[in-house]
Image (cartoon, rainbow, N blue to C red; front, side, top):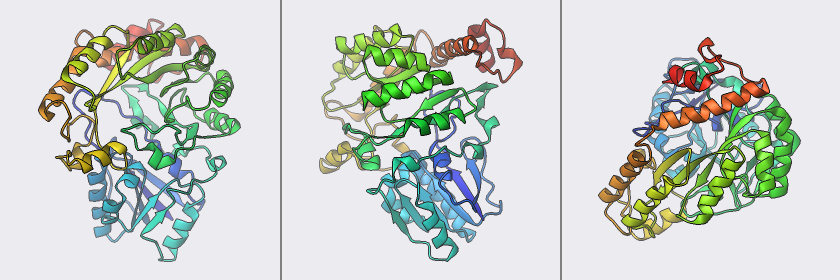
Length: 424
């Protein structure tokens, strides 16, 4: 049988980089499908959907809240054509009740070990409206290599340059950050994959450049160090969220190919300044993630924070405004306080103010958000900073003999200039 799997498009924010990364959720879910299922995958961010393509069953995988309304519209088109539609993914879990109004079935939770039941029910004409496994995580040992073969690789090159593939080495998060829904989605228990399973999947990924999408690698130092030791021989180059701020861990991460990390910058302390410096001491770049609009932030606090960013030698910065996504503490608080004035899910993109801030008007917070982007990238554009990081990683690949150019314009050793010329 043919299962049509779709990842809906969404509008990027103004000023965001133009390349598109391959999605992670659909390729992980596809790995858990029964052997008799043939997958036809469309990422609507890089190609149009052919609604006339023959298929037996349709799946819509949504990660972001801004995909919800488009996903529902896609489902309506298929259901009008007599197809059964099932939804899954992070966004589906956050918006389950609404999504059930647009679906024949909704799947909540992790898919390993559960898809045989879903497809058996479908073939018997007994598809359930809801499969809820949110509180029943499967054994982490069941997580195998993702089905990256369903991707159309050529669509994820940016002007001839291979971008990163997504990969995960663990699930769950023992932290419970105020604006985050991870504890609802994956539980408060950190669930690391066995190292041999991680290495097996990494060895099978042709792309040398990876984004390790784990919520945080800094959750179990012993496992983290074991992971990095196992990755050293693979010579991958990777991006991740925060790693342990420990010289031994940072040294192993650098040897394992750490390219740059996302580091939350939440204040102007010496701790943050020193942490950025330590990453750089080990040759690891840093993209600061800066959240604006918390209740304890005044206008002056935000301006001081932006000035501080220019002092600490960040390689990149990603600014977002606080966004009250469902199933987060911030959402519950703001609903109770009647502070959310915009309920259009298309605007829940972390770039638009949809609530009443505590210490300023929504309009002023929006202005400060735009000011932050303009100020940080005033002297050097985001694209130029990214290309500078990219040139460093390619030089490291050349040293490792792992660099595989996708077009002949990128072979020259003076790569830093060539990459800008070819990718702009």
